[in-house]
Length: 169
Image 1 (tube, helix red, strand yellow):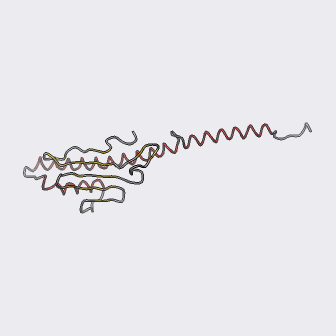
Image 2 (cartoon, rainbow, N blue to C red):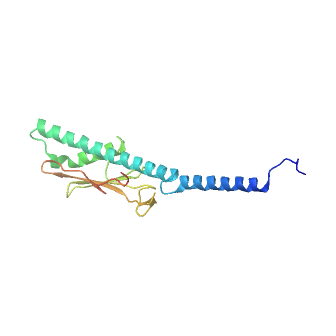
Image 3 (cartoon, rainbow, N blue to C red):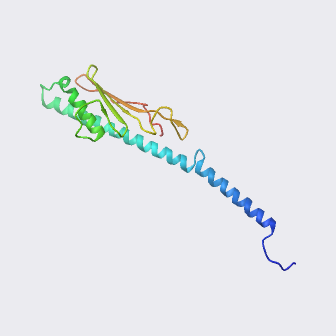
């Protein structure tokens, strides 16, 4: 019997224990707080948020430059009479939709843009499957991204975001 070759029970148990340890480590690396899946979710949300904020900032800067250009070259330019047109241009820039004809504008990509002529306020709200109130992504409670700009003092006032800081830095 001593000349028989094969795997002993001890070698088999040791192999199974090693495989279980490797499997446990791999699962933790995938799904833990710093796991690959969690980091991918954070990256996707941060990327979307960055794109939304950048779209809004670009539209704001386009309108601001248009106001500066027109008020500096035309002394008779009446900003208050042109605010609705500027708000529509702002919406077109954010949505990248030149065929847009009126505000409020709701876009299937998650943007809602409104203009209040009584206060001269343009408001952009972005919400989608990731950015909706109460949803948790990688342990962070999400909400909508909101931006507001107000026509004031003969120009376009400061652009403010809510939340003011990015969800993921």
